[in-house]
Length: 268
Ligand SMILES: Nc1ncnc2c1ncn2[C@@H]1O[C@H](COP(=O)(O)OP(=O)(O)OP(=O)(O)O)[C@@H](O)[C@H]1O
View 1 (cartoon, rainbow, N blue to C red):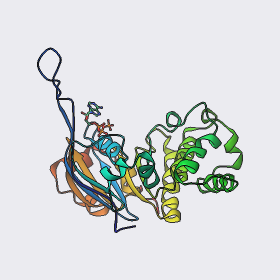
View 2 (cartoon, protein in one colour):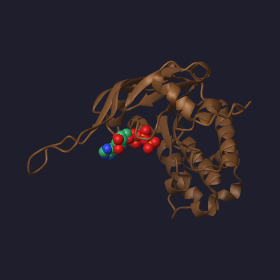
View 3 (spheres, protein in one colour):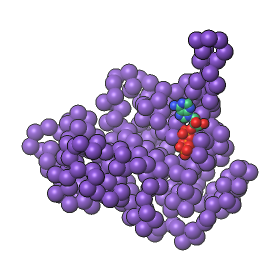
View 4 (tube, rainbow, N blue to C red):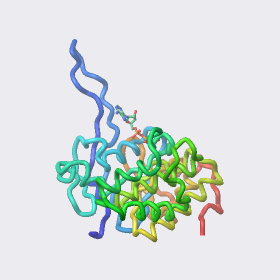
């Protein structure tokens, strides 16, 4: 890996603004406006901000689900536009997305074995007899039993389904994860377990995380650094402890003041 897992350089994304058939233009939404962010190798960078501030659009561009209107991105030192040009597989091997709603993100008609099989075979290149052993290793890593493989997504709780979704991301052999509100849909007690799991996996697999959340207690417990987004722009970036102790930007101050703070949130 290079020193940076992710480099986002002056990225913008505008939706709409196209000419209508019978005159006028559709309303343009400037979802992301000139954002520059770096995620160092092994780091957890949290992106926080209210609904509509552009967090998900930024994340979707990072994994190739949206194309930036302008700007550059590099994933593990490789230009993202070039990577995208070589097809979705090159991208998927390097960076994976974990969605907010774990059950909806897993195909309901496939067993967990079938779900893990696709990234293992197509992205990580694990064919043959080795494949099943690798699946068991992945389930072990996310603390799920072996018989998980024969079961379907609806048979699991939200927390278990999110563990499976994380195993699927790891199956691709990607070392950079974009986690988009990965615990927001889970009960608070389950949230803590999944956050601890994410911390453990980060160390075990040498991962780097871009962690999107509107929940400041969660962010404080997991992130090394924080980038605050407001109306499509990053208004403040800093080490997590510094940012929570002495926010500089007015918007960050408002965000911190309006959030219920858990002073004991920092897990370990
Ligand atoms: N496909 C799209 N077409 C048009 N506008 C979009 C599209 N996707 C997002 N937007 C708009 O871009 C802006 C940023 O949305 P985005 O989902 O990135 O914000 P967010 O911070 O992730 O919010 P949330 O936490 O609610 O998901 C919003 O105004 C949204 O309505």
